[in-house]
Length: 621
Ligand code: F6R
Image (cartoon, rainbow, N blue to C red):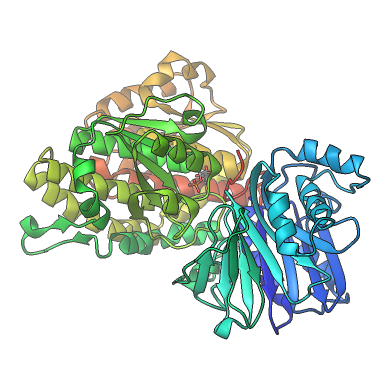
């Protein structure tokens, strides 16, 4: 979490930095700050709260300078206030630095520095690091070397950008376990720095993704110099990054979340492009082609077991992936919270395949889980959205979901993209293993290719208005229960998570049949139950669960297959979705639940895109 931006070149840095922070605000919005260097004149401005507050407070101030760094914070050490806000300045006022990550041994380092006479203004680990770099400057004149020396003393994660009043011609950056991208301007005349490519891409598509434990010195007119923590110069690649800038704007919608919900049909088309091939005249020509499978075919087909590691919404997608892979490939699959997996001394064997699912590709727990799995000989298969992210790079192979940058903090299009990729993966593997009948393989592909159209049909219907009206009646409800079975059980979990995250209403997801083992005690006329009750083999059993709720005066909202009569007769409200295969149904049933959480949050007048206490990319444990 936390977003960092940097610029060095001939332009004025301030507008680039503020624009960049706005694009990275999804990474945290507890405070924001900027440091500008104009010749040797250093100006630092910081404010508690959002980037807009910082921008407003900067009006009329000295904002000149072609070198600057900026930060938007998700607080870890110290409360969100302007003192703890970044950039932090060293004791002598020579260095200013922004940081994303956590310095785990900051307490010890701080004490050591205090004994040497350093004083601290903030409670942050970042101030410790900038002071440590200044202290290293007492033993060398070279700032880069001082950075290397200081970083060698640090335990933890960092992406930093540092400016030095004594050297206004250079910007120094470094990273370990937190992301950092360098954008290379035309003729290397200017450089841009970001936690991801979004603040950079409008200026240049040429990027260098810094590796762990690397320090880069950026000096306009010269090629970037990159060093290891052993102070050795290292080679690097400049990559062309293609990012659609329209994905970074709201495109006329009031919030990113609702735009991203509406983007889903196109996102799934992008996700399937070049991978899913459909012959409308002859179904038996339908096929799926995933290059990730081609390259690691033997290991994938011989997998005795798969383990999915992920967090939050991505974990819910993993639960669907488990059902798909087990059903189509007959390979046993476990789904683990990455945070638990990494500390559980898990049994991992060389034949295992570990599938890491992550939208951001930067989630610290998921990254650590795959590092552990790799050490134990597993093949790492990434299902990631952010191209070039840490998890993508730490995977042996994988499939990008290609749904474009997701800015709304509550994940929507990434979930359907992940489920789509896991469906393609299960289909192709199942077909190659021979565990999935040919006709089922071909038929399911045809049905998968229809999903974007069905999503569009739903989003263009009156469903959204209907849900908006319902949301008004739910505004003051304090608890919700979400129930589903089979493929719709993870959707129930996801619906409940969405509501919690952005509406701050307590909601629980359960397998419908588990209700009678405890949660039924909660049912009364004040707690609505949302049933996902589409047609499948357990449909009749869900109807029985609904009757149990009704018998206790519970209110029911049900997501049903279009034309359903039985549920309609029981439920207080229904939302219809078009018919599809049971294996594909989560791609549709999740949409009304995303819309419901959105409209309830709007009705409660909450900040949908930036819910309290959350950040988009969880790069800390
Ligand atoms: C929920 C949400 C989070 C993320 C989780 C994992 O809306 O966004 O639960 O799904 O933090 O993040 P990624 O997928 O980036 O690893």
